[in-house]
Image 1 (tube, helix red, strand yellow):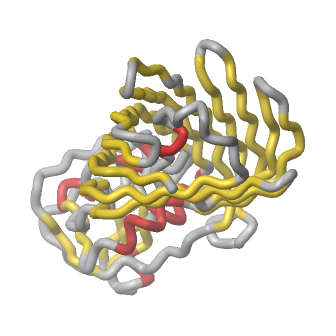
Image 2: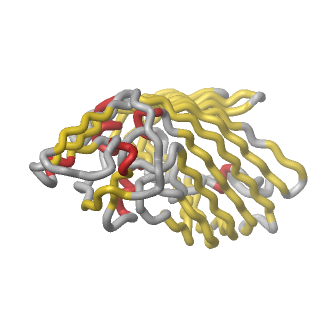
Amino acid sequence: MKHIILLVFFSSVYAQDESLVERAWDFGIGLGYGVQSNPFIGADEVPTYITFDLAVYGKRFFFDNGDVGFTLVDRETYGLNLIATYSSERIYYSFFNTLGILANDIGLTSPAPPLVVEITPSDTLVNPGFILLDFDLPDRAFAINVGAELLLSKPFGNLQIQALSDISSKHTGQEFSIEYSRTWGSGRWRFQPSIGINWKSSDLVDYYYGFDFKSIDPNISISYRGEDVINYSVGLVSSYRINNHVSLVASMKYNRFGSAISNSPLVVDNFSKSFFTGVFYSF
C-alpha cells in the first residue's frame, strides 16, 4: 500500500448491506482533514482535505487507486497479479521551497570553501536544530514501477506481497514489500490494523534521499550516497457506517525509516506519520 494518504481504501473496510449486488467498480469520496508529515528539513507537511477510492475490475485487467494490473490467478483465498504503480517518495518534493543541511549532520560549524565531506548511512548523526546551508534541491520525478503482487486471504487475515522495479529510468531501483492486515468489526464499526516491512534498493534511496552539493556549488563538495534500506510501518483504518453509503472514517499510519534514509543530511526525522478523519460517501 502507499504510505502517503492520497488514496484511502475505505470502501474495503466498512460493511455494505448484504442486499447490495456485487459490482465491477467502486467509487467513493472522503471529505475531512488529514496531514502527512514531511521528513525533509524545512519542508511543509502534506495536507489532505479530500480522498478518493476508485477501482474498476474487468475480467483480467483492473485499475485500483492508481495501480494498473493484470490478474494471472484469481482464487478464493489467493491471487497473483502483474501491476504498474509509482514511487510515492516524489510527493515530499512538492511541499518545500528552500531546504537546508543541519550543521552537525556534516560535522561542521563554519563552511569554508573548498569543502569536501563524505557521509555514509553508517555514520552516527546528531541533529542540533540549526541550519548550515540553504539551497534549492534538484527536482525528482515520479518513477513508474512494474512487478508482481501476491494476495493471500485467510481467516487469520490478509497478506500483500509486492516486488517492483523502475521501468521509467528515473531511479532504476527496486523495492520489495510485505504487509499484513486484518479486518474485524462489531455492529456498524469496522477496524483494520496493519503492519508492514519494505526494502528499497540503493539506487532508489540515492535518487530520492541522496545529495551532491557540488552540482549546485562547485566550490563545496558535500555528498551523501544512499544504500539499501529496510523500513517498517504500522497503521489503522476504522469506520462507523451510518447507512449503506455514508460512513465516518479515520486512518493513521506510522513509517519508521532505516538508517540509509534517516541519516541523510536532507532528512530531519527518522519517521513519517499521517492521519485522516472525515466523512466517506460510497456511490
